[in-house]
Amino acid sequence: RARPDRGLRSSLDAEPALKEFWYPTEFGSKLVPNMMVPFELFDEPWVLFRDADGRPSCIRDECAHRACPLSVGRVVEGKIECAYHGWQFDGDGSCTKMPSTLLCRNVSVSALPCVEKDGFIWVWPGDGVPPAVPATAAPPPGYVVHAEIALEVPVEHGLLIENLLDLAHAPFTHQATFAKGWPVPDVVKFHAQRMLAGQWDPYPIEMAFQPPCMTVSKIGLAQPGKIMRGVTADSCERHLHQLHVCAPSKRGTTRLLYRMSMDFLGWVRHVPGIDRLWKGVAGQVLGEDLVLVLGQQDRMQRGGDTWANPVSYDKLTVRYRRWRNGVAAGRLPDGTSGGG
Image (cartoon, rainbow, N blue to C red; front, side, top):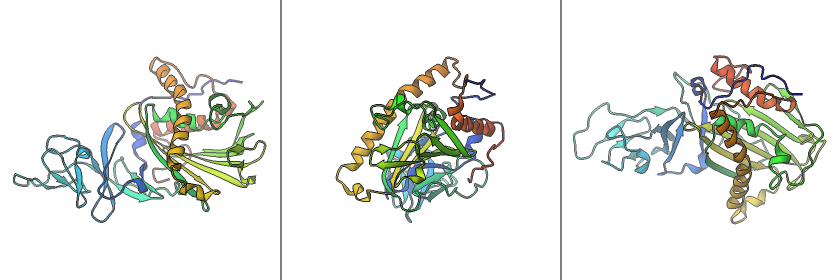
């Protein structure tokens, strides 16, 4: 039975209070020396690179001279060199070189605290001294990473998170991909074991939201590509572990980082072309979801309400939305903080 929205509110704007968290922005394996990774976070441009000692740095992607994007330049001995006039900036954002003119002191660009942990490059866009990086993103013991994929998705990050936390839509939306052949259950339930985590029924899938923007799932498999029903994930012999990072990029856009790990078939990661296969599968599944969430975004822009009538299987998405509404209001309903 549908129930009133009970005060749930969705927004296409990222609330300022969401900045007070650490955000994974790139896979550490992808940020190789002398490479730059430009990205946006909360509608601001940034660029990642490694300094001369290999440590990750994040500075504003905008030269202090003429506002040229620094990411169109190059990395020289651990510093970014602007392609326009050769000005160089270190990992703290300080300008260390101005060719063809006298060096002006105290010229710099903004920099964000930046840490590498659990296979990700994390940044802190908030104010003040950040807490420790949360210890929540590492694959479980015994799992091998098979895919690390980064994408820009043209939808608000909260809508994408809610889609990922909703398994009840799978038999309808994903019949051409992972839910092919799934019958429509008489009842779909989510049994909450913690405020933002629990177990799906009748599917052997555990799922959790990890603030501020991560969705984690463990899927029990009978055999590769086959899912059982009426059992728990822990009772299955094989497991697929998924981590989705949905970071707020520019308005109406999400920076999506997807990591897939398994506790079986470890040799598959060495098969030539397997990366292209995983990326193709992920893109196909995402394409099925995008039709829906882009439609939701359009209707919200016209005044639509995505929370007019939540039902029982919306439990986890409802709790995510309450968490986000609470953050916007200065509360953390589940006791979390920016450091996890």
